Image (cartoon, rainbow over all chains, first blue to last red):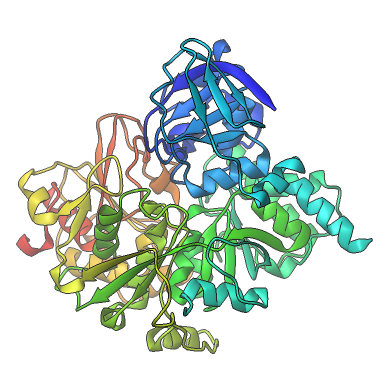
Length: 167
Length: 419
């Protein structure tokens, strides 16, 4: 899989209250949640046209705080194609794996600037900054997570498993 | 090599010895969700076109975040949960009038027990570590997975050993302990890891303080925070008709990191905006004379009887400052009733506090105490992120019930020592 898109840079410890504030949690409709994606980190972000296909780049501990799956759902529904961070909070990470929002953990995010166009090759584990030509390698997911991803998410994995048990 | 508490609980449930770093698919005892997270799980379940959940007895549904329903759309979410519970024969659905804040309610009602494996679509599900359970916050899709097949996936975590000595001083409790611990570890210091509490000081930590400590393990990124099962746990479980076996980690268990905390050295802590890890000693904060507009005492962190008794001991015969609103929220119907019976509610009302039915409401800026631009609150809740309790221009300071109550009387963040 390859993804190419524009970079939007955020800081450290971006929490799920900032990604999707609780005042919008009266709904679980993805399209509605998308409008308020990253609202308290960058007001109006979710309503911008230029974020479609974009890539969020953040620092340490992205997605900390509440377990609300509304956070990765809003990012995915807003059209963001991938989140790159130095590290992800645990529940946010499993939510992304479960719902199929691509994420990449890298040691250094300094080579990415706001507005850069970058491409990510998931098979080779390489990110290329198209503006500067700089390259960055990243490790692959653990096998168990790869398995979930290859099923297209946790629900499909679970369905397959019970189907297998019945047969 | 011996085993950690985490490895012992997970191995027991899995049927063979599990090791740190291993991924396992495990049947859970309880899968919890609330009015915000359950609708996504239910919708995912319906998409599979399965007619029946794997096991209705595993499922617990507690509408508590926006309950009593704050608006039409929140009411629709609760309606969806209620209908799902009825259709699937889920008995552990807690309607208004029998409910409580989920993490106060489940241990209190004996739904979660020592040694259980619990997942909850709420980050503070780690609270039940206080009982010696392996319990952790997950997402709604994980919960849907339990509805489908009864199981969830786990990575057996590495463990941070928190070695505790001594005894709390006056006005110091579990909240001060955990705020200090989070400031020591940082907000991601325990990411992907479990914390386990150990040492001679454990016996000096009450059950309610243990719930407070385990509850905030997530604020250091922790997967869970587990106490051994000792006499204090056994007494608590006995009161609920549960027989709990004593359980502790092996002496030669492997820990990724060790932290020592002396209870006697702790001063009351206050976490300043905008991270729970920003805690400072009350003596330092008091000098800044931080004016407050609102006090909140309650939540899954500090909404139990010990917390309300502590707040009442400060508020008795006093009045809240005329520039401050004070909201007190018993964590469950039972806590509410006990607070009435012990005369605590009289003390609160006489002190000009508003006493509410159980709800998570103000903690997440949902309802029942949302802050305006520029307003400042001191709260016994668990997060002080930007805009957590309302407007992004508001601020939240986190503390224990005694510090919150004393601050309400003074009108600025204050130690209970100097009333």
